[in-house]
Every structure is written in structure tokens, then in C-alpha cells.
Length: 368
Image (tube, rainbow, N blue to C red; front, side):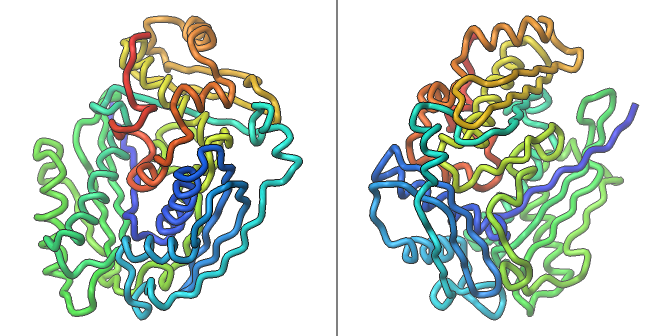
């Protein structure tokens, strides 16, 4: 039986990702100076203006505005007529301290909020991610690299990628469609753009055996993408939650990651569940695995654990749920200590997915 599944990724210059990176950069700077920092920061970008708001309780001291300008510069935004300029953009800052009502529960080791989180893994790729989102991330990352290292020097920072995969009997067989929309300088022709993206991005990344004469390739289907970034569309922290996780292949609890320290279980529990799901698959207990967990604000222990191996398990789902409870401390502090989440690691996670990167603690494989 044939099925088609589509996932998308975006470059670091996408306005939502600009906001995610600013929020995570503020978080990391706090953690560098104070590992017990409490951070919940969101960024909004529109035109040539950045607005930062949220709650921070920390001993860290730094110039937020200077940090924000450095992040914008790093991404490559230097033209307010096309996207944004790190030198001239307006930066509004509205940061307060964490609510004492929330702190009262977190200080005793409880969850920083109520909520549900999911983790997922599949053996259809080497990094145990769904094939479509894995390929979309690789293409988006290569698109940014080709701009930065001047392989395609006329590209601008904003860009999006979409990949449709044909599955046969539940396994990735071929790529049906690749869609790339990328910001570019005005003087470049559509023909030159298509040629360079095809040769220097798509063929550079996609294995030849996954494409054939029927694979459809669309590059800037509107014909022009010169105005981009926050000038073309507003950006907001936490709006790319499907890009950040499994590309729509698994369910999502709804909580965003960026700008939040690890006491927020939206982030830390989602990382832990990815770790557990990946190790269930890597240890041969299932071909794919989805786990859900729920918390109440201020309470340490999760309210529920759900696991589904979709009929592929070598152990029953009930046995695996019992194994999880026995082996792992799923309290917020237990997760933080196990994955060492008080370190300034979060800008590593912002772009091209929070999962599937080997250098992150929740991606390591253990014997279960």
C-alpha cells in the first residue's frame, strides 16, 4: 500500500526562527552566569522592530539589547529594505520576574506548569527520526550553508523547505515532491535560482536512489521572493512547534520549547520522552514508539504515562510503561539532573529540529 506524508523545515532566517534564537540566546546567557536561572522569554519581530517580553529570575547581568543585535547579525539580517537590519532595528524590552505563585511550586521541585508532552522515535532513519522531517531539516540547513559559505552568494536568510515522501508498506520508498522557497537578491533570475538550488542544495543532500524522473521539484513557485524576514511576515517565539519536533508524524502536546528553562516541563519532559522513545526503538523493543506524559503545576510526579508501539513491540506496551516507571525518574528535577539541563546548551537546539542531533544528551543510546 502506498501512502504519502509531508513535513516542512525552515532556515534560521525565517522570522519565527529568528525569534526562537533570540529567546534561546537570552536563556543561554542567563545559564552561563547562573545555572539556576528561571527564564520564560518570548520574542516578536515585525518590520524593523523586535519586542522581547517575559519573566526572568536570575543573578546574571548582561546587556539584552546588545545580545539581540548580535543574534540578528549572526543570522545575516543587514538590510531593513529587504528584511531587517541589526544596526538600525528598534528593540523594545519588557521583562519582569517569575510570578511568586509559580515559583512556590517550582522551588520545591514541582512542575512549572500543567500540560501534556509527547516523545517519538522510529527506525526508518539512522537518527531514529521520521524520514520526511529528517530530509527537510537537512535541506533547510544546507540552504543556509550555501548562503553563508557563498556557494550561492545571492541568497538571503529567509527560507522554507517541504518534503513529501512516498511510503510503501510503511517504509520510505522515494521522495515524491521537494518544495523550496528561498529569499534572494532582486537581480537574480528564476532560471539561475532553480539551477543553483537543484545542483547545490537538493542534489548535494538527497540520496540519488530516493529521487527519480517522477520526483517533482518546485523552487519559489510564486516566481519571486525578495522581501523576507520580519519585513515580509511577522515572527514569534514558539510558532514552529511541528518543525521543532517530528514534522507532524507524531502528536504534540502544544507547548513550545524556545526561551524556556528546564523547569518548564513543556521542554524538559519532551526531551526526556524523546530519549526514552529512542532507546526503546534502539534497543529493539519496537520499530516505532510514541510516549505521552502529563503533569500538574507544582506536583513532582507525572499524573499519567501512555505508550504506543503501534503493534511493532517485542514487549507489550504495558510492560514497557512499567519499565519506564522503574528505570527513570520523571520528576522535573530528576529529568534536569539526568539530562544535565542546567547548562547553556539551548541555542544548539533552536534550528533544524530539537531531535535527531547526536551531540545532545537526549539523543544518546543506552542499554535498557
